Length: 465
Image 1 (cartoon, rainbow, N blue to C red):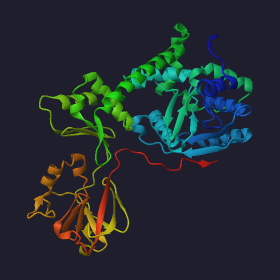
Image 2 (spheres, rainbow, N blue to C red; image 1 turned 120 degrees about the vertical axis):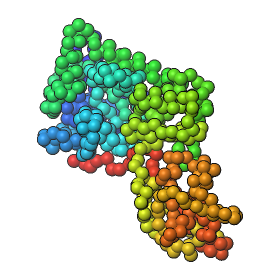
Image 3 (cartoon, one colour; image 1 turned 90 degrees about the horizontal axis):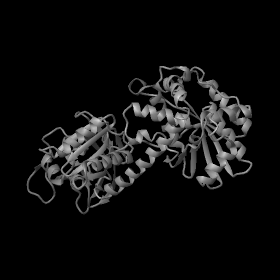
């Protein structure tokens, strides 16, 4: 710890979160508690602060199940929390996609997903990342060739779940936390995986940062300061993106935020890239790589300017149709042979298609006498035709879709409603004239909510332990 570094204490923490950050009381705080040095130090300081501040405090331990000692760590956290008289929530998580994303990234994604589901309105989730973590994160992001969002590293405060996520320890060096923990006699967990220099962060922490500090003793502080400068620059770019996006985004009839391509033409290529990245982040999508964004830009502004195309990267599909640009969660389309019976008295959720429901009305919708209580749901197979009410002839479904401007990201997932071998309705768009309820008949009016555009559903985040 350098002499100029601020010393960590419960008083210093209180001055930051209740003074500078103006946290109101009573404060509902959840602390991510791994049992390690940093999170134990944060929890201990908050426990001290309960004597002078109104704090409703909960500790939160995520069990990744990646270490043989994981169960004993949860037990250690439970003992610490009992001594502090702090309730503890344990959230077991499943760490997936390790081979594709790496162990650190996969574990982090699972951990944050659990946190996001469990932060309630008015709650603050405190994480124990400190200044040295911030410096390491910035270097890692720099070596990945990331943009400003990555170089800004970890924000001090950000909306999260239904509340907020704060990182107050970013103001303090790891050595300052260690000094505090030793003075308080804290006993913490040492994760053996932190010694594994095959993991990139550990290699940077144990092999590279000590060498940097030999020549630049303030290296961690300087890197963390640079991350703050980058974060400010990114905030300015986000404010510009908000203004640009307001002039070119609208919500389509299926509640999808769509960019009007013609409105992008009036701004510079740099601002186009900025607004597209921002638009994707706002929807929770993985940011495009430089090559993916280059591909998207070249498709948008090529000499031929195709009116319909698709650009993809993991988990994301970007579609252009006419003057609209849409971003969707990449969900596999069911096979063309799909055939699902649907008892219309209850909603039907069809993976990759969406949710079908409906209401019974008098004199409108599908005549219930034509199908009883069960319809069959299929996908387009080609060659379908419909005769619409008031028209003399059948029309090809392909032509109807084109005339109505149904975008391509919906066409391949349209639920086709059959009674026996007869196509009687296409989603909630059209009903064949032979199957429309007469004024004195009961009819069924279908409602189609397409497959989710973005991932994420709220579930219980954890259990007491």
